[in-house]
Image (cartoon, rainbow, N blue to C red):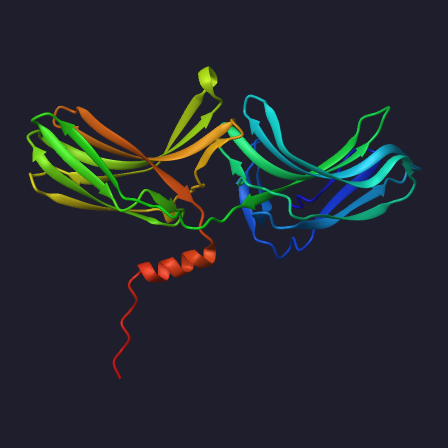
Length: 318
């Protein structure tokens, strides 16, 4: 699929070519219309360069305009139809009023434009970036073309990363402590924990842990939460005894995760929650939730981390 070319009306064809697009890493996403497409990935505030070609159709002698612009746009859209532009940087390709009497190609470059948020396609909210070309006309509809690209942002490891302790307890019946090795994880990290049974006078039938993604949109009375369980697995089947400790490991690399988003332009947030659930013999459920913070680590750092984490094969002795 050529996502960088389309015909926009009978007057002309606009083509946007991003520099180095054939060599750039891509991501396959499902857009708001439910269609799958591949988008080029840009890291952080990496410069975006390319060309805009406007080809007049055979039956078009000229296009009158009041200006031709190429615009770098960042938008937040909701499934309810609300649209908010948080980024809009324009460059003039032609000033107007004027006439385009022949096909023409323009170069453009957006450098040092802050893109502080990663692209995000969620359940009810979408944060997307586009290169948009607009031929502005007074007496008729503008001719436009837009090309989406995907933004990723790598972060440094958090300076502070304390462990997490959770307690599940019922007075004189049950006391359990769940300890995680830290509270902030990169997207390919491993959550390591341990469950301690300090008091067990209930007959516990099973215990499971799940990773939940929570997308929050709106604010105040209009706030809405949408939860999606990404993983759920049983960590115990049968009754534990006092003093027992159960180790837990959850590998995050196998899930489709994004970094944590905190109140992005007062439009949405994305958080991740570890949910511990115990079920007794009467099918009563006891649970405890704790939010964790996720961040994106560079691929090079991930490879070094994986090499350190995995046990290396012993070298044969000479």
